[in-house]
Length: 406
Image (cartoon, rainbow, N blue to C red; front, side):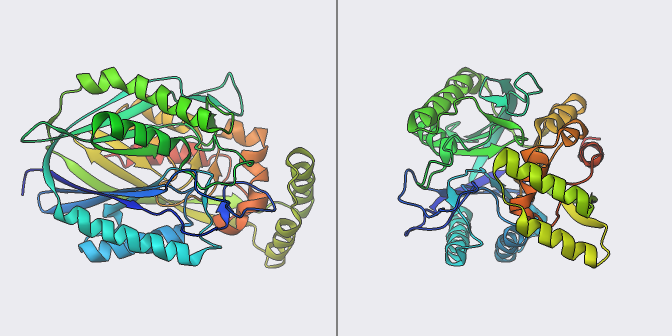
């Protein structure tokens, strides 16, 4: 079948009971209610007998093992390759800690598979248009005068026969943690509010994905529902005119694929580890006792480097591509990639979340994103330290080397 088609479903994945939350370092992480629902949105794209499953989930980002388990289930059901399944996490800091809530993870997997089955049944012929616009929705949280990716990527999908608007797919670059550590209610953060407003206005499906926002926070940052609404309105106002002006065209090219690259993270010396732990406690009140114990254990095994294989995944619609990795990448990486290839909008939180990946300049600054966060999340990231100083430059080169239009 040469005509591209799109099937879609939206599945509620809101927890039914109080759960352990994820996103902030605090002693009491039990949820106390629901502010707004969490969703998994499943889109199934087909062309030339090939199927590609693109999914957005309201979650901070699964561990790689969990993300790949879900991808495998979807791929097996659809009888496609795993890299034809792409999971994009919103990175909301008001979601569920699936490591502590395994039954919830099982529930999500069940809901997503039901959604895949539903999407498989309602495919419609489609046309597409894509463009990047600029809008003030974020600030560089490590340097207010520093680099900022102010783009919003818009993919507009219409019915190929009726021209009716079918899907708005956005990529934005701003941390989904407007609701801060004083919030104990489950929420999709500003993604949820923005999605609801757009659905109500345009009467179509809406998917939102996260860009390279490791060092970018939302411009409205007051940990309140009013801030969520303000952020939603900023995005709506920014895309309204461009969306209306975009003219969809037939889809000649639809493709999803992955390439993998291995990176190293040096294990710190015992002296350096103690310095990092002392600094983390002084600056961010993070107790690094368990991390220090793990550093000592790794040293006892004479391990000097740990390794992480990064999957770079691309989703091309004609010549526009959403490209992602399972890291909290900083915005400078996306900007450098865009200089060479503007049609690639690079982001993080894709198929999991394995820790911050700073630029060399930010690596030298240290701080929470580079060092201190690892004292909490090393058990999930599988490395004690961030990837080495030159990893960002290597990743940029790899993304550009494996792109389709090189």
